[in-house]
Image (tube, rainbow, N blue to C red; front, top):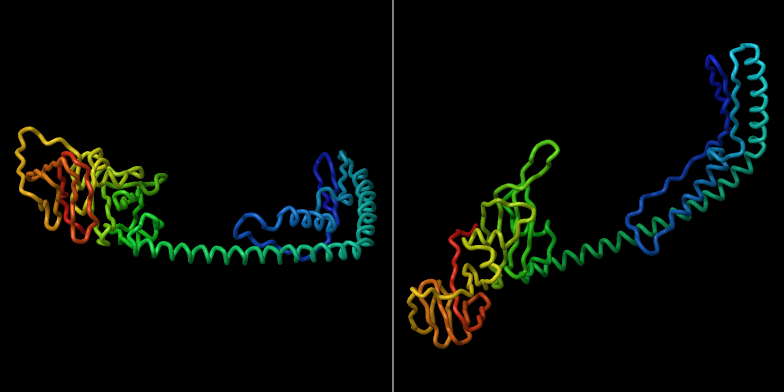
Length: 323
């Protein structure tokens, strides 16, 4: 490497740092970080030491810079000749130590290779752990779907499983209590906005009998919308009623006083909807209301039974057609 000479109207400068050209080793990326990983400070220390022996370090003692503030051509020429002599001495000294520096670099790069080997071993270990975790996660999600406990699955798994009918969609809520998930359709909102929610949602779930169901619902949906919000739309009731109700299939049972003008009859067991049978000693009912001073059970041949404490209730049935 030759000295760099810079000439301006008012000054002339000389800069020189002899550099030893070598093949550099490149560090691989870490796959994961955690306890037991190789210490990156070791690698940085090795790199800095190698930089010193090649002359690239800014702290290297052989770096040379000089400047003359003069417009005289004669002075400049004499000064430049002197500086070139100094640079020649620096170069000779650097060449004399070249073999020593190369040997030092060889030793340091052996340490670098050991570090890279340890990093590769670390990456291989992390890959195996990630593969094992992914397999365990897939198995767990498969079992969750088979048992109907779908709320334990990831968003992408639920999107695929429920065949959510939107090209761009976001899972905004999952409810174990109501055995339901709620997706909102998205659309591009324009430059600087990105994807935004639309008025279309998809409420779906797996009942305790393994039956899958889903409804397309329309409303003022957002990323904060919940399963209860969507159920409120499907059943046409306030969210308070949804939160306070027990559900069996398409029916909500809500604790609610029977209005004075409603006449109840006592006819034993009551079939509210096909195969949904309310049973209780002393049961009284009409089309929407029922009460009993005894424990109440709602039976269905495939759904789990719903057990209600003695009291007064109203029945709410959704009017949606399932997808």
